[in-house]
Length: 176
Image (cartoon, rainbow, N blue to C red; front, side):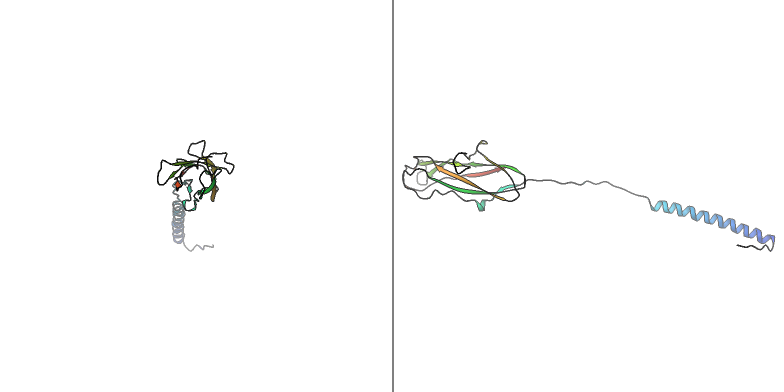
């Protein structure tokens, strides 16, 4: 910039203007810095992230197959049959199934006439399936339906009873 000094009064005037301009620019810079600093203030908060994992097991009662020994003649030996339970448990969920019943087929006309039987976990009739913790069937859930066979065998010589219909009710309970 080139200044031509015309008079001393003009020089004084321009000096005052320049000083005012300097103050004004300083004020703008200071104000801008304060405004920028205030604009970038931050606020924060914390929050929780939570997850609840559950396990589920159920016996699919609509897919349970009852055990039916059929019709036999009196004093028949080696009478066996089987049925099944379908279980659905979440993956890797350990569970046990207990079977609660009298283990006697009762005559529907006279419940004092009975035919004892036993439930088993295997076709070889070696592992009893009952209600005590030693007789429970144990497994682990797969996340899909699992079908388990229940084997039943009438005790030897137990069918020498009057003709008639005999039945029993067994309740399966799953614990997980």
